[in-house]
Length: 492
RNA sequence: GGCGUCGUGGCCGAGUGGCUAGGCUGGGCUCUGCAAAAGCUCCUACAGCGGUUCGAAUCCGCUCGUCGCCUCCA
Image (cartoon, rainbow, N blue to C red; front, side, top):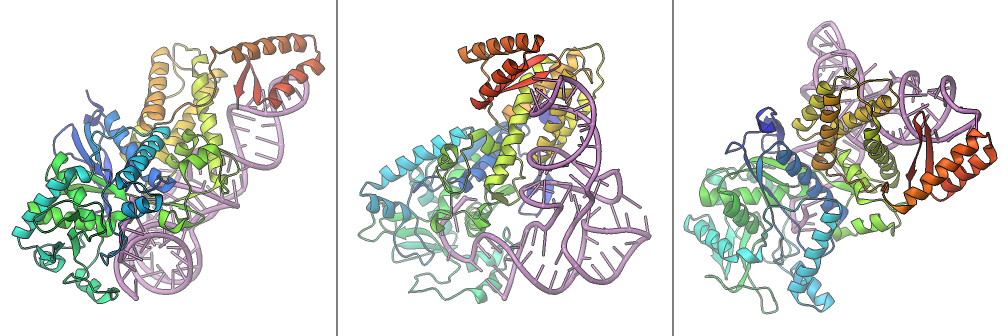
């Protein structure tokens, strides 16, 4: 029987601002859409955190046996740099600066995006559609919204009429805004805008002569508005109403608000049942953003080539660091924080490695079923990975006690214990064991030999030689660990 | 100015109206030839001020502060 039948998940829904019991539209199936990146520069660590948060959601839902269709877009159409709807689009700007084609920009950073997410062990989504691949769908939506009188055309551009929409619907339902109030609080925009109201947003923009990325439409040669692509692609692949929509907290307004308005305007149904927002990763107490220069690239963490960190960290240690914080909490990225996480991560991996040393007995002194249930309870409660990890450290303690024979475990319990640990650590948390402990390689053979020689020396009470072996191996980054059952080692 | 978020022990980071996660660091002990590793153990916190309650860090109000959004942004 699928695990989802016995596990009830609660999800914090941004729409209701409360945790709700998750019930998919179709039993056993989940449709999930997450707003992907605009590929105009290297993906930074803050972006990675958001996608990794949803990777955890994807992984856990799959673990429970749900058939998940996970759609995450690539924004490869240029969007304007400000809401005055003036100026250059980001991809075209980058193309001009680097003297390459816009699509070369897109290709370069799409590859970087995939490469980085793969390093940190995110699963690829089920569908990864691009904005430029769905221009026709976007045009159809605009036509539909125009027909319904909720958009207007001016000079070849089309804008969504927020005030008109707000007469029958609530624009601001997600972000808790009141459109009447925000009208009074809106600053005067610089320059002349074609829009009837500052709150209106573009569905289609006419391209000026210099604009490279352009497509024909009934209104002008131009390009779609930013918010529209997500509506087009999410509804195309997941339906007019689907289960989960995710994204970074910073997209809540206006992006997701606009998505709701567009979708509601076109289909007249609630587009999304559960809105999930991953919180920001901050650096030096400030938001990490490409536009401000306050950011760190994942590769700089892995290579150690940056001013912020004391040393390089592996992708798994970095991922573990993220998993130790809840996805809805702001996470401050610091070198000391990462170092602490790395130590804990190594401790966890070493315990998992040594689990095969456990000798089973007839009865168990540990309640494995109760422990296992605590792991599921943690994840069922809005994907609480920090609590799950706390439980995994409890398992580490069990493992060490079992090896020391201070606790006992039965054959069947041990099998269950191992399977559960592996499932949560590798499948759900998506950690990888990148600690070098390949017992089949030559180095291990050499170390084993030295361990044996040291044992002989110790048996002869030749402490000078035994310590020399130990210390010189330590200098090489190989640590010997003397236990009751003999000596083991780990390589740093 | 508006909307929202958060404010937890040396640090990071969970959390529930009463039984007080976890990681890292530091102290003690066990083990060890000595260490390390491992185990046990100690340091017991919830921004401030009021209120509700038998009882609040957890609920309400106010104050202060943080961060985010209000303009592209994961």
